Length: 115
View (tube, rainbow, N blue to C red):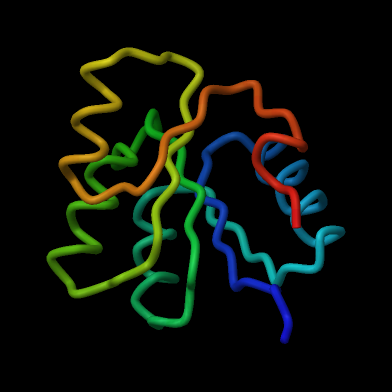
């Protein structure tokens, strides 16, 4: 049985997208990226993304808005939120919106991407 996942990385920072995509691909997962919340929602609408790593602070939609809109649209993807600006309030808001987990940037590959 394969442990490969279909993963979508949603982050407005190109370097973060590239690093996460490379690390997750090396771990054996199928990875796509989106540079904005809207782009991420369009990709999620296909319905085949198992896990979305989503930045909270993006210029068009926040990660929390992405989760809310995806849940409203019936998307059952597992959301793991990422932020460089952590607060308990943000973590609670992300979980209430439907996120499964929460990670603080900078991410270390052993904390986010082990197979």
